Amino acid sequence: MAYSIYIQSSGRTITELGMDCSSPIGGIQLSLDLSGGATVTNVVGGIDAGALPNVSWNVSGNSLIITAISMSGNAIQTGSNLNIFSIEGVGLNSLCFNIGILSDQLGYNTYYPTLDPDCGGTDPVLGCTDPNCPSYNPSATQDDGSCEAYDECGECGGDGPFQCPDGSFECIASDCFGGGSSPCVKGGDNWPACMEQFHGEPPIK
Image 1 (spheres, rainbow, N blue to C red):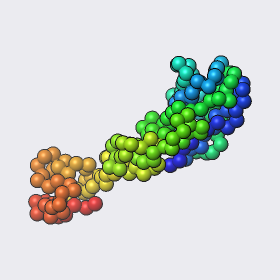
Image 2: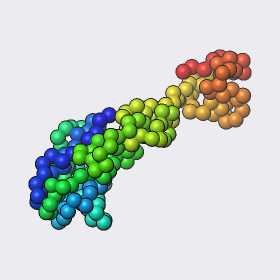
Image 3: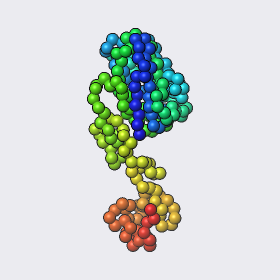
Image 4: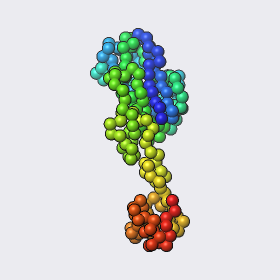
């Protein structure tokens, strides 16, 4: 998935921030650098940020922190060139981004958007940023959509649930037989043969 946050228009007294997102967004946190001489007097939600009415901001040292979240499960819908914040003050044409974090409308998934201009001037490291997934890249600073999907059992990259010999569905193999009574371990080298030997038939994926 692709996400980016950028300066749509910049002047000395008003700067507009824009966003492109390929899935609904229910939370935004940004840090912008003020060391170039900018002074901020107010931050308000943009015309496309109505789903995130709870906008707060504060200045900490040389950083402007902006946070907007949905308290009701609403979200900014997928789109491009979305106007998300309007910053008021003086000297704003020197602003750049330190960091940006997005979350989905339920707060389960976190995304790291491309930022323009990025104060660090370094390219993001693309990869899977979910530590629960097999393809997790601890060096990645921006999620590129390569993480595996979660199965119905809540396992990233998993293939559960599976069907037990009696037709029921379980996420853990031993639960088919009352828990812990089966010698067969799902995913083991002898899983199909073990199921057939001890339980009369191979597992049904």
